[in-house]
Length: 159
Image 1 (tube, rainbow, N blue to C red):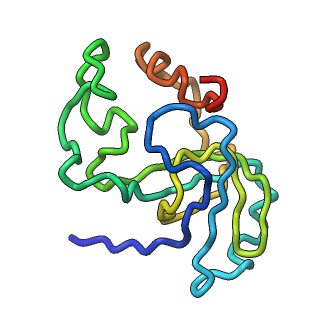
Image 2 (tube, one colour):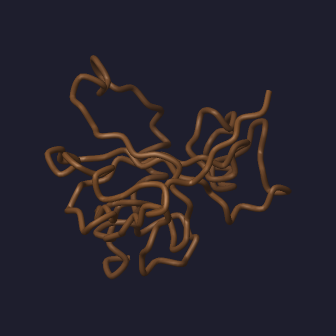
């Protein structure tokens, strides 16, 4: 089976660095493909505090894709786990998903905070965050995740 996805827009941001940490406070603009989507495609999005942004890790080379288990970020202090038990960018379909704060709309451009995607990243979909789709009940995760994520959402200047 083949699945064809066309980008709906492109990330515009000052960040070009592919490193894993210091994404906090980053403002990004998602410019929709105006030939396919006008400003009306974003009508009502500012009524939501957050949006899920689904994007393509287009700068990850195909030869760097991981299909099995690995140590997150190559850190052998953390357990070797399957690619589907982590959120690394070297995934089979190179899709990323981040929940971002909605800051506003400017024509056919959505302005967000907290998008961990670099300049020029193709965006494949946007979905408003609704409480009814949030996890029901407590969220569980292994202890090493907090260590891995310790600097992820810090601002660059605090690193």
